[in-house]
Image (cartoon, rainbow over all chains, first blue to last red; front, side):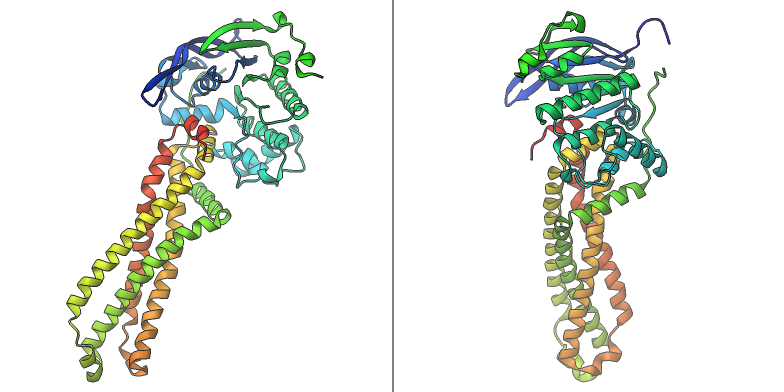
Length: 245
Length: 211
């Protein structure tokens, strides 16, 4: 490993405009970020601040209007369709607020799907899928369809799926947004554990204050700009008090 | 740490095929809509074709009594029927396009998720095209059989068993194969535009879309 920290994600002057009817709305107004390998980052901000849009830029799910996004020092805009699919498949694992499991597939099939896309053999992907589902605590529910699972269980499947191809980055957009307090805590704990054990960078867009406590850095977004970046040591938030416990 | 970006592999067609089959099995009601649309079109096409095949065979070799009773102007009759069949097949294509558009927007989030997991646009397109082709194949097989049988039976009712040696079974089989292929092609043609839409969606947009 080199002396200096590896930067996995770097954005330079990223802006994004959306057309709302005939009015052009600038959602992101120039974002510069650097995220290191193995960091746990929370992107915080009120609704409409541009969190999800930024999240989509970092994940290569949408194209910025201006500026550049580098993943592993590769400019995402320069990639062709095959390289972009490869990047999404192997470098990045996605977790969504709405879980987004494929409804017609069982938990195990959902987890093996990205491995099939990566060209892993059937037996190998089933083995790894079982291991991952056991890791997230769903060892005995692998043959259930998403609608037979609770919200928390679905999100666990989604986490297992995100880790299927051992990505370098996990992107989680409001992973606890549709979950109750207790389940949300469990999911956050699981993400942190995976972050520590496997050394992946976890980037979450959230306004769940429970996230702050375990983040290495918190990036506050307001009106499409980075308001401030805080290290964990500087944070002084009593999570319990905020949540009313 | 490797800083190289590879190229995503194209999955073999069998994977897309497996996924299409699963989708058809689970969304069976939706599949029936496309199939029945093709079924109706092909049944009509097949009945017209079978009827004209049998008529021309009877006019050529059949017993004199039947030949006289068939003395309609066959060519004029055919021209109008071809016009009707073409129209019905056109309606069929529009119906399939509509149904597949529904399928694509219904599964928009699923498409977006698959793209996030590393699916190539081509793979998504293959899934939808194979699905539509399979539904078209099933519909046109059934439609062809029903159309041909109905006409053969009606001929026997009208002229009795005496025409049995003159019915051109081999020609009917050829017409049947033609109809089935045409029905399947129509299902694929109807799915092209919806499939193109599904491939064009950016993953972020596909997931954001509320249906």
